[in-house]
Length: 77
Image (cartoon, rainbow, N blue to C red):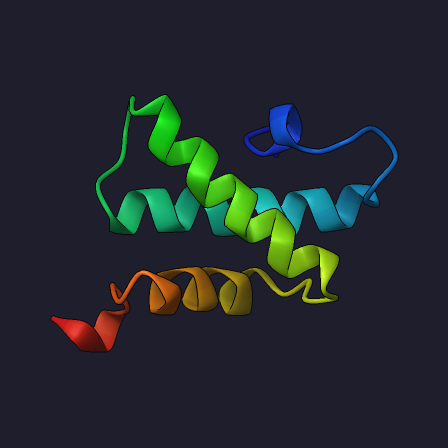
């Protein structure tokens, strides 16, 4: 659950929101084969957080929107 924590301001989100964002972030990183690239993970986390700040809390939607924004969705290959 703590994958996104370093990028989230304290108290900005509920624990369930953080869990959803962490899951989305992990799934995007997995899909894009990003392992130890801290800069890429930070970029992905920032995008997930931005979408969550706009109200989206479903991890699958967060994941799909991040991938779509990168033109890397499942239907693009």
